[in-house]
Image 1 (cartoon, rainbow, N blue to C red):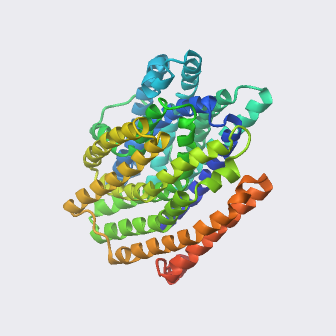
Image 2: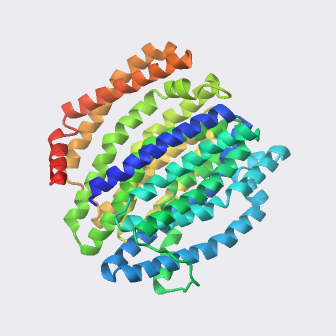
Image 3: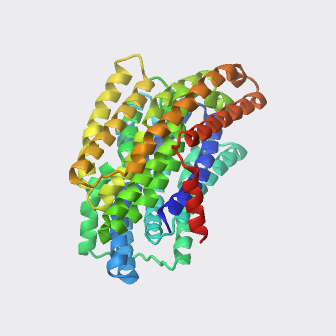
Length: 518
C-alpha cells in the first residue's frame, strides 16, 4: 500500500472515529457537565490511557514496528511472527502483575495524579473506585497495540484505525445503559471503558486471523531481539508520549484549581485532538513502516520525499484547523455542547482553553513526522532527551502560569502549546545536524502558500462569526445551522484560497488518481 493511500485509509477511519468521539464527548458533557463528577471520571479514565500512550501505543509500537518490518524483510514471515509471539508473551507476563499492583495501590497512585482531591474524602473515594474499574483497560489495549503494529507492518492499516470506532460505540452505549439502569453516570462510563478494551482486542484478533497472523501466548524466552526491543522501549516511553505526559502535568496542576478546571481542559483538548488525531496519527502511523523499509534499503531520496510529503499533507489540514479553532472556538461549544449540565459559562471557559491549545496543532502534527524519522533509524534516545527537556519546561510553565497568574486553567493550555513548539524546534535541529532532515523544494514553496490561504480563511471567518454570534445562544435548531454555516464558509474560503495561491495544485491530485487507476 502506498504512503498516500495508507494515510488516506488511516485518516478516513480516524476521522470517523474522532467524529464518534466528538459525539461521545458531547453526550458526556450533557450528562456529566463540567463539575466534580466529570472531573473525577476524566482523571480515572486518563490513568490507563497515560500508560497506554507511553508504553503500548508509544514506546512499544515505535520500537516494535521497525524491528518486525526488518525481520520480515531479512528473515521472512516465520521468524518475524515468532518475534511477535515472544513480544506478546512478555507483554502479558509484565502487564498482569503491574495491573494488579496498581489496582491495590490505587489510593497512593491517585494522590500522585490528582493531589487536589486528598482533602475531599468522598470525592477521593469515588476517584479510587473508578480508577480500579478502568485500569484493566491497559491490558486489553496494549495487546491491541501489538496486533495493530503487526498488521501495519504487513500494510494492513484499516483494522487498527477502525478499532477506536468500537471504543466510541461502547462508551455511548454505556451512557445509554447508565440512564436505563439509573446508575451514576461516571460509574457507567468507567465500566464502558474497560469493556471497550475487550471489544477492540477481539476485533484485532479477528483481523489478524484474516491476515494469516496467528499470535500465540507462549512461555517467553529473553531472545536478543527482545532485549533490543526492551532497550529501545525505555527511551521511547518518554519520547513518543510528550503529549500524554504534558496532560499528566496539566491534570495534576488543574486538580489544585477550582472545580471544573479539569473538565474545561479535557473538553478543549478533545476538540483540539480532532484534527491532531485525524492528521497527525494518520501520517505517523502510515509513515513509520514506510520509512523503516526505505531506511533498511538505504533509499535516501525516497526517505526525503515521504518526509516532505508527510509534512506537506499535515500543513494543508493543520494550519487552517489551528486558525479556525484558535480564533473562533466559542461558537462550537455554544452551538453543540450547551445543554443539560453544560451551560454558557462552561462553554466560555472551555473555549478559552481551546483558543490557546490550537496554535500548537501544527507543531504536534509535525512532531509525528519528525519522531518517525528517528524511530525508523531505530534511534529512540535522542527524542527521549529532547522530550525530557521540553517536559521540564512544561512542568515549570504550567505551574507558574496556572497557580501564580490570573490565567488559571488557560495557563496550563498555554504551557502545553509553548513546549510543543520548543519540542519541534529541538527535534528539527538535531535531525538537520545528522543529515536526516532534507526537505524538498516543493514543500519549501508550498508551505508559505498554505499559511497565506489559512490567513485569508481567518479573515473571512472572524467577521462572519461576529455577525452570527447572537444565533449561537438561541435554541438548538437555530445555533446548529448557524455553526454549520460558519464551518461551510470557512471550508469554502480555505478551499478557494489554497487553490488560488497554489498551496495545493489540483492537477497533482488528478495525476495521482490517474496513476492509481492504472
